[in-house]
Length: 436
Figure 1 (cartoon, rainbow, N blue to C red):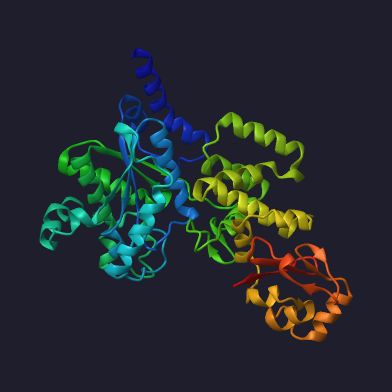
Figure 2: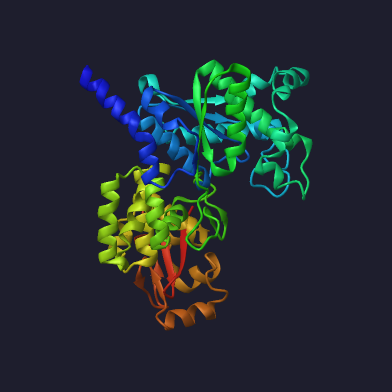
């Protein structure tokens, strides 16, 4: 029992150090490390449901909660049913558009389901929990809020926050101005009702978080702590977490597992080393070993592969990883028809999400059809029979990775997994025929 207690204390002591070597601490209030070493501590991070999915920008805060739980402490994930109605001005140049209650509720459910992929909600005393600040604000009248929260902070104090100062020139509504009061009251409420002593978040949240510690000190005379992580940028200084198509989402319907995997795979060496520390649970020694191997043969992109594989499994699944790797090998590697025929339906669907897909009646193929008719009329990969014939004469067309000629008759034997035919026109121009 003594050994177990010592081991748990060692785990608790390691949390701040763990974040430090990973480069995940931007600001921290005095006494935070000592509090975490002293006892099991409840901490929370807030997520406003501005969309029905989290994106990889949210992952830093999620990983902080994950490390907190791994160190033996209790994580709370606050979904902002109330704050989502107001809109956080932090880091924004203009006011957010208000969302309807119906949209907010839909978004809340999406965010909740994603958080459950990262945190353990059934592991005893330090099980993660999801809380919604709408639950304690829904019966809170304006007069009660002004009396119980508003009177404790001066306008001068609120004006000193960066999130307010940066918006004074472009304009800041009273609604947004009060956001820090609402978030601050969240911390006070959780401190009082759930003994929550630490709030974490991105560095742009420092002002809002310290407003909460001030509430706790002024109203309850208690002690609370704050810890923020840096806002992640790429090595070139550009914003992290976006691609040409916009945000990289955790929802596979918004960002396919294939695109998600490719985002991490295409990171620069410098960004990959930073990201593997922040977005995976790999140990310091594991990462050092990977970095050393990578430096010996950078062209093998060992860091990028390890990062992309780890985070794709965490966010999606092992099966999703296997499907996207198989799809990548077909689209970018040198492979044969034999390998194409071994693809799972999931891998073929991954390909179909990334290349043009054409629906063709299965009866058309089972009754046999000439390749020119198929590719110009039924699956219009070519605009005319003449264009199709020229491509075939030039040996540019392959079915399931095997080159075909204009005399080819397509039949049931060309169908893969009962539903698909993969067509290639040139080196990189792929199409997937889906038989219905």
